[in-house]
Image (cartoon, rainbow, N blue to C red):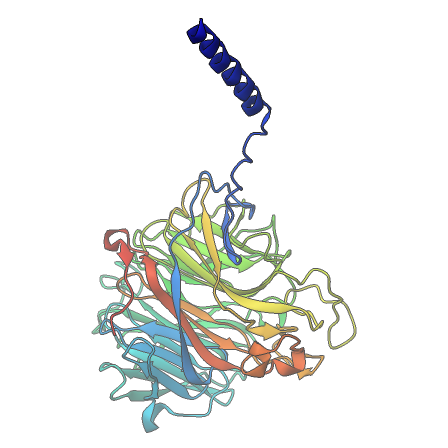
Length: 493
């Protein structure tokens, strides 16, 4: 009998405890996963994608202070690993992964310039330094020994004034036109060298057969400069020899040559998103299979892309947004590509620009981007990767790379001298640059307009943001743009 009572007691106690447990509230659900501040994963419409389906890329970037003023910088890397940063009259070189920099221009190429340009031939390692001499003549220098020695030659733009916005690039010869097997039989340098600039009549481009020593063949390819069509972005050449030049016009446009510059045709795209006004440079990148990616700033100030898979003959007419919708104002987009679908894009962008009043030097509202005069606008450097940029629904991984603003206040997009709070805001000039090395590692050159107390202060104003310090970010560790390389590790000291 005592056993029965004990058993009943245990059962009653169990029932009582069970009731208590049943009444307890369930544990709270785990928090939704979130990305770190300044990291975005977006689709082709700029909207964020679910972290249940997509994880951020492991992208770590290293900063290097070039130590000289460097607005409108160009960057390239030779096969030895030496980085060349060219801006103003300086040719800055670092052969220790950005730990130190030295000016290696030498007396042959060190000129005061208005519009410099640098280029590293990825096939021959020839380093080019192109300088403007006034508004009528250019001086083209090149080095075949990592900048130890230079050869320089003048290029006379002729009697028509305004030789401006100079650009140079190299690429493979084709089997037609000026290419080997075409109409010319003279001796050829290993790659074709292209040189473009604008005059009042429009864009002029020339082809050199002797590695950039002379440019005797070419002429007007697009005009007029008076309609802004004479200004243009960088030259790009694909592995199949197709050459691309991008004019500054209202409808995004690419000028294309498939015969080494003998003839040119143009194609338009992007009418669904337009362009801002005043307009700035757009750019084309090509991958190892000669697919082309044209990027530009749209009228809503986002970065957009159109793709061509047939050497520039046709382009998609539905534009793809590369920048996150959270980045509401952008300027200076640059792009490079590795294997098919693997691209990297950089630009300056702001996440707090929409609330501002805008006005230009004439007191009229700006139609274009980055002309914000309010002190609380901050522009940062962004880098976006895509490893499937040819897919119907590409994914874009974006990192706000700079820990402090690159510019506080407005960025002047006019070719003249804009002025806002704090005086002239023309300190960053017209463009930045992005290129990859032979391993597919990304390098970005930019001018930092907010340094010292501007960068560290909590209440910095536009008048504090007027510097133009030459600066570089490069991929420390993360995916190469060449699939066979895999993930890149940081350089060993």
